[in-house]
Image 1 (cartoon, helix red, strand yellow):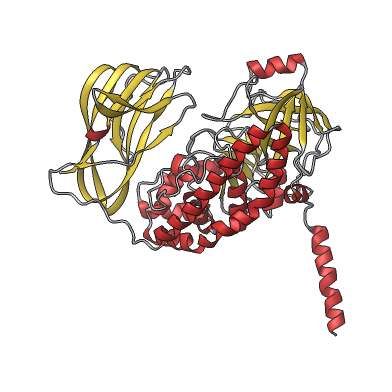
Image 2 (image 1 turned 180 degrees about the vertical axis):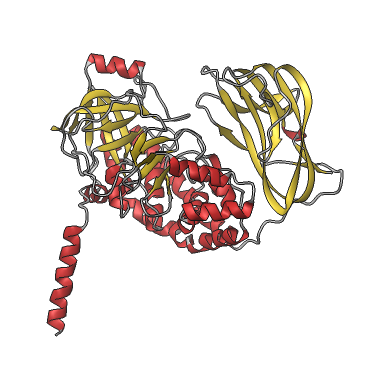
Length: 559
């Protein structure tokens, strides 16, 4: 009987393995061989990437002496801080079957090559991916690669798998849903790019070599008919995203929570939010509406996916109890039961941040990085070794901080004496554009936060700070200094709140901050709940000029 049962179990395991989608990329990411990738471009393709870096140019791709794809596509990637022009050291997205048939390379049809200019240790993306997946959160896997373009050796890059249909097949039961790209600092109420469209059940997956629309091809309008998630009738392909944005805007908080709960996997989202906070992912969805994907799986609730984790662990003492900024995160944290669940998740996830265990897991990766860098030169190897040691020290410090914070009591609202202002400190930068200048400067012997427009002539940037307040009326004040501030070209002249200014919560500014000069500005608001996280903002919304806010003048008064 025991032998028969063993045979049955073995056959069941074999059938399950046979039925499971093949993950050819798994061995590549586990074994960790650092490949040598060469991207070969014609003169015309080089010119195209200089002129239109975000559009695909045709190329050939090689791994050592082996040709991987003869008709691949490559484009430049990166946002503020990481984007570099073609003739510098750019980051790339490589699509092997963009312009013709190609076999997957180690199970990958599309992948990213990150220049890691914001993480000289080359370890942040890898570490975060390992932690996330160990905690049950779908995340792209990470490797490294030495990259050359037309014979120009660019050095060691961070290689990441792409969020595409193959990723969905490896991580979800149903890969035929809608996958949205958060883009640069866009929340769910923005014009998110639809990377993968919902397909009806039984729809055939395009072959690897099937023609794909070029990046510049016209996209269907938002009202165009597309297959719904498993439904036979055509429907608005963005209805799922719009429904979630509308739920987050419901002024009745109880109704808002009910609507969100029907659309989002709350348990998963709370774990996602806790992991972003614990990683110190200040540039992720929860705290900056940036670096994320959103997947609507047919028949299931929406899942948020983390991205762009090259700046994690920068501040080992970063609070996990600060109020998040993004629409879904802010709404979830305002419900007491969900906030309590969030605190419990922080405690449950602590073991994933065991610094000793993480250091052991990274050892073979670090050895391979060092071997690859020493082939380039002793100086690059020495520099990376120093940065890696610093990174691991921050990881250890982060674990200590997380354990202390997990035992800390729930934050209390700010305490006020009526009419006596309280200084507001601890501001965090934010930007919805790539070229805004944010800096701390000294003017007249005093410290100021200054934000200035870049060459794009579109600036929406500044600083934010969340504060926990009790029920009552408040007044937020600041000293403001303007220099040549002009209204955004696409802003209606009748729209209030142009230029530099301050605000609290979701309330719109009623006073314009245009032109030049110094002035005192104020924003009055009311908290109607017993306790609420309120986001304060000092910002510039303009096409030209700069705004500065005197730091010691940023004060809050309970009236």
